[in-house]
Image 1: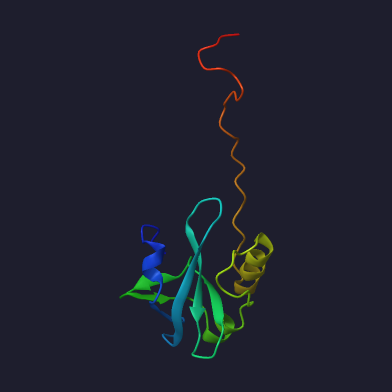
Image 2 (image 1 turned 135 degrees about the vertical axis):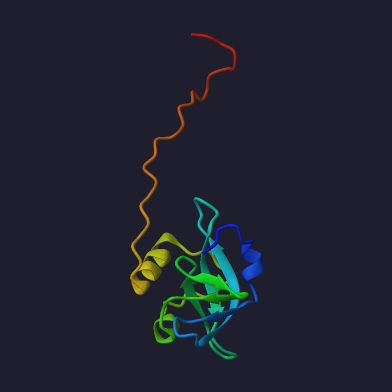
Length: 124
């Protein structure tokens, strides 16, 4: 999905499955804790239904609607964690497994080379 879209602008948009069948309306957008990139959306699947979590990648925003490349049945069967709460790493893993998405690798980059605790301008 486009990463330059304001996640708040997704709330209230319609969501459709891979066949163009309407799933519902986006209630919430969840950001990755480490990067701040929008990662999941909670879609209200009906008036008396629960919210279903859907991945924003590889979904696409087309004509002001989110098109999710999965079948409606799979989306409606997604684990239910309730909305308005933080997704734990374990819950995210469950969602990745549910959708058959490869789990993104953890960053293995070395931390920046900094000398914490040294006083600026002081030489050894």
